[in-house]
Every structure is written in C-alpha cells, then in structure tokens.
Image (cartoon, rainbow, N blue to C red; front, side, top):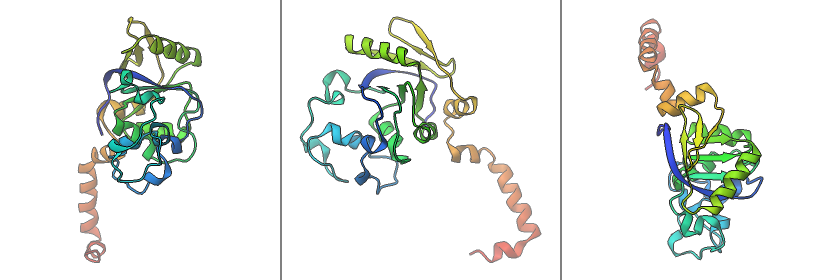
Length: 215
C-alpha cells in the first residue's frame, strides 16, 4: 500500500449529499477484484451519457460536459471535496479502489458512512472529517479560484489552504500509523513474519503429522 505523508493536490467538487457507493462505482463493475482499472468508471453514471459496461473503452464514450470532473479546470485533481454522508449504501470496497485508481488521495467531507470510511484507510486513502461550515468555505474558495490546491499533512494532522491558513483534523492514531508507513492488513501481518515462521517451525516439530497430511 502506498504511504501517505504529505500530499499537495488540486481540489475537485462532488457537491451533493449522500453520495452512495453505487454512484461512486456502479454495480456492473464489481465482477473484478483486481483493485485496479476502476478509475475510468468512477462516477460512471454522472461522467458519461451512456450506460457503461466492464471492459469498455471509455475514451470513445459520450461525456457529460456538465459534470465537474469533466471540466478542464479539475483535470488531475487528487483531493475530493464532498458533502455529508459520503460513501453511504453498500459496503463495496471497489468504491475506494475506484477513487484511488482515478488519482484521489484524500476525500474531505463533513461526514462519511462508516464502512466506506474504514475501507479508505485500508486502501491508502485519507478520509478527513471537517466541520460543515469549514467544508462550505473550502467549496466557495475552490469555485472562486481555478487551480485551487490543498496541502494535507498527515503527520501534523492539518490541511493547509493556498493562503497558508491551517485547518486541524482528527485521525485515529493506529490508522495514522498505518497510512504513514503504507501498511495494509497484509503489511501489518508481515511485520511479524519472523514470529510466524518460528511458530510454524515449532508446530511442525511438535506435530509433524499435521503438516505431512497437507500436500
């Protein structure tokens, strides 16, 4: 998993409340479990004028010119500004996969659905909860200033605006540690690889018949 330390990126809007995971990545794309390749279908129903299908070449599809992520000013955005209850709906882990594959490293919103919030951390993306009035202000400043970039400093737990103003945010210490070090569940387990091998060797010596039965 890619570590998250300090990230500076262009901000883009998802200016609606209760964006569910089916809107983030529609159900027809859930057949794959590769974790990659979902970026072109992020917000598929909003980005395109036709119905998307797995494996389809999105470069030839008719684009919804009114959807913000299709605006030239938001090309290459890596920080998503969202509204309350972002990521509600089904628990599909494909939602953070799609956001990350598109290029987003962080989502800022007044609130998140619990399962989506947890899945973000497990996939190297930082969800940040800020007061609704602060999020409103970020939206206003972003709309008023093309090329609006935010710097997110995880170690010091602050969002830095273009004018230098700092906004503190809270994050669980264990999740912070995992993101800073690029540790997902597998990475955490592998930190104890020596202890696991030692246990297996001890177990093999004390009960060899268990291992002989597994070929």
